Length: 335
Image (cartoon, rainbow, N blue to C red):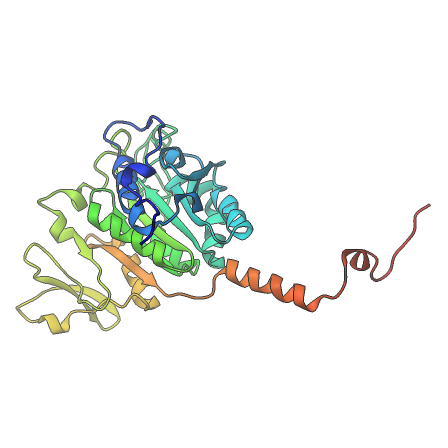
């Protein structure tokens, strides 16, 4: 029997005053992270949270673990260096749609591509909250904000689609008000060996209130949310009477019980890249439900493991000392 104390939610609550607006969706994400972490963490001193700049990036202050509040868009750089320096750490990166996809976009895609064993939690509220309501890289086209008074002309990023395009090995989506689901996605991300990417829809009740109300309102969400379960048919709706089929190569919503049965419904396979790309595009049309869950998951060697292996091989193959290496090849003596 272990003498090690059992961790509780309170062990992950820091003594810092939480400085988010009352009603912000960040509170729910923080609470569920603190709640699930005792179940997935044995030693909190081996856990570190890295963030950039933005409302979401205050997260490390409120988790009673190690952490860095870094600079705008550069959290992936710090997180990568930390993981390489200490591969045994459980590294979590918290970012937002502005921090992660605007100034930090280039860093984020290469973190995903390299497949470091790092967990990314991207809070998407489709607005710049900290700087008071400018449009962000995920704001919908036509969005009226202080910086786009006539409406945004930009086409928005679709975060899960971008993560898949960057060869992310774990891509998932959840929402701040779906508490149990949010916990389960954090657990799945933790269990994945490689870069995990969770897009979390998060309501900014000050500058973009109700951006996801059709996904959270009791009267509408059953017809708007598709909960993905690996190996299970894609069924949704108040009466579980709707599903997704493939009409040739195109997805289509059908009603179960008329011309189609449950056997006709498309079954989710989280290792299928074509299926994952299709699901990541569902937000483009009001005719399709919003998929929540693991969109794609397939493990491959991680960058940090490959780097450690490469360094060990280099040490074994090298018989030279530092002085020999410095004086190898052509040398010049300057007098």
